[in-house]
Length: 126
Image 1 (cartoon, rainbow, N blue to C red):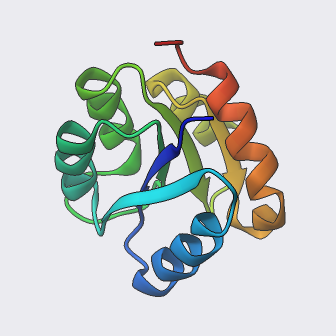
Image 2: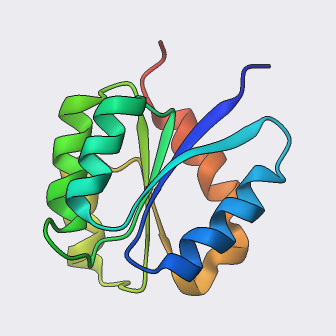
Image 3: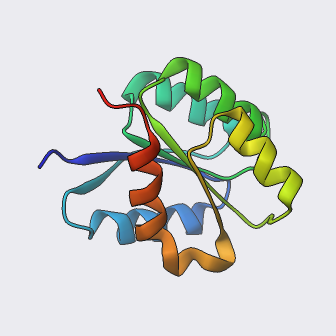
């Protein structure tokens, strides 16, 4: 099994650290980079070409929606899972229209492993 390479993009440093620790403990998963805002997320996705980007929507500089669009252009084979505090139907639809492969409210973070697997299954095959 190949290693699942993950990029975390969220403006909350503590959450990024917690996600990194949790995800790196999953067999075959490795966090390869982080971004503290949408612009950093786009740059890191272009540089790293991760298998999965976990993206917050409410971030400084470039919104998560716009960053999702840009990452889909920069790394079209990468999956994007939106992990956010916002849970409105219009926002979910906007994120999916921007190219996200999945959406998980932060209040449901205990479902993260399942959500990652579902997002990866929806991404284009290499």
